Length: 189
Image (cartoon, rainbow, N blue to C red; front, side):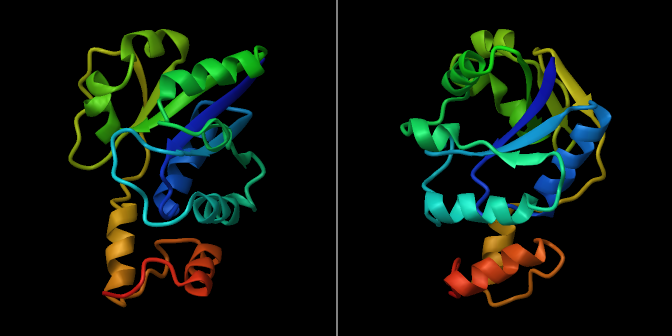
């Protein structure tokens, strides 16, 4: 059975932290593939600063050179609030011969009790949690944890740097930096 990891997020913008998480989980869990799944309308965050098309394009640019990375646009196609429970049910219906794993950061592990239908979701799909500075691994849910190098980068930090006119070199793949510059995203304050 094919083993596929799903890494969801707003990816506003996708950064090297996302790529390191996906690559480490892919290797350590011996997955066949990791799909980056941009949210259409994240239930726990405010509206994104960029359009859905821009976020999808940035993800495509970020993952284009990895042999096992791809993009999953099921939440963009489905529209509405991006509840993981609804998405995973749909994915499993579409691909019954695939074993899916949902990849989350330690910040989301702490937030799991607030997820939509979490008790039913946790029965649908195994979760893989990755460590993140400042967050605990303690949870009542059966999470498989993976140790990855600590990379303390967030999309909001990158947006703030760009807005302040500062460099984001090495925090983002070069292709993303070019895309942001070409499209004037996250403008200066």
